[in-house]
Picture 1 (cartoon, helix red, strand yellow):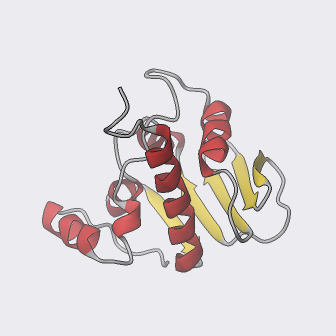
Picture 2: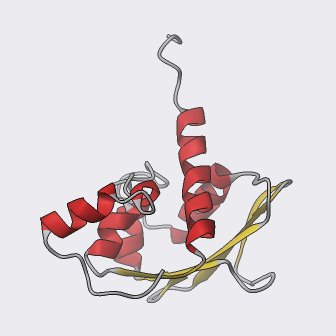
Length: 149
């Protein structure tokens, strides 16, 4: 994924959201933090819990430009968050704390934040999509099925 000009108009963002390669990023993550909470570390801890185990290793580096870095490393035994890399990441995400809070609160999807020019992503698109699917998998696992009361 390359750094590109923002998709600032609604039509461009809407068209991008329909692209099969970007569809996984157009769903808000759901709340990783309580409303009004500002503990970024807690949000990344919750993110790692939601990612959980992955069939093949996956590493994502989040650089929150006005705070610090978090590395999520997922594999068959689960997902660990740390402030030190275990190796080169598959995907790097650079954004500021306000943009991360919009994603972590479920207010905006990652694609919306990216499309507005508030986030840069570089690395392996296939790995980024696997990461997004792991999050969506845990979203559906966290929700009760329609047959449960």
